[in-house]
Image 1 (cartoon, one colour):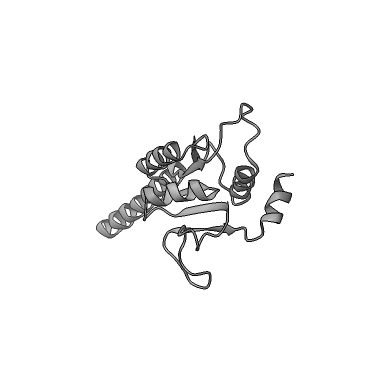
Image 2 (spheres, rainbow, N blue to C red; image 1 turned 90 degrees about the vertical axis):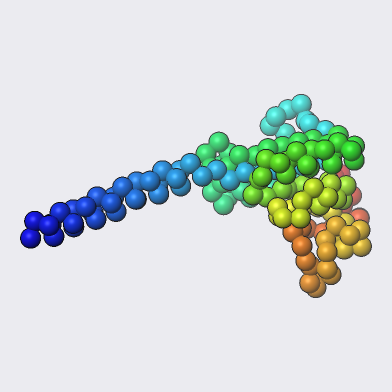
Length: 160
């Protein structure tokens, strides 16, 4: 009877320790996002681009909070293709769970840097025609997805 009681107590202790370690691991899990901004760094840290603001707001709504369970690594390409390529490769080296960007040149730089990390773009145009997204509109393929802007007049209204 004592052996049975000791076995039960040992199993309970093991279960409780397992729960403790599982909770500790969950608290430490941090989701990493690489952000490849095609333009310049804005001097005001509180004024990110419209695309990045919406992206960050969406993450917050889903419970991803910077400094708690989310780490965002951001690079600015300053509208220079070679710099976009260098920063895309740099972001890939830190192994984020996802890359976020917008504009065809930045999407292309990210595409050239990885075929395995998911790439999400906020705004780009003619993504199939430019070879940014593999496949077709009906059946996209590969690791790239996002919002395609088909009407440039709408694009102009976004920035005016």
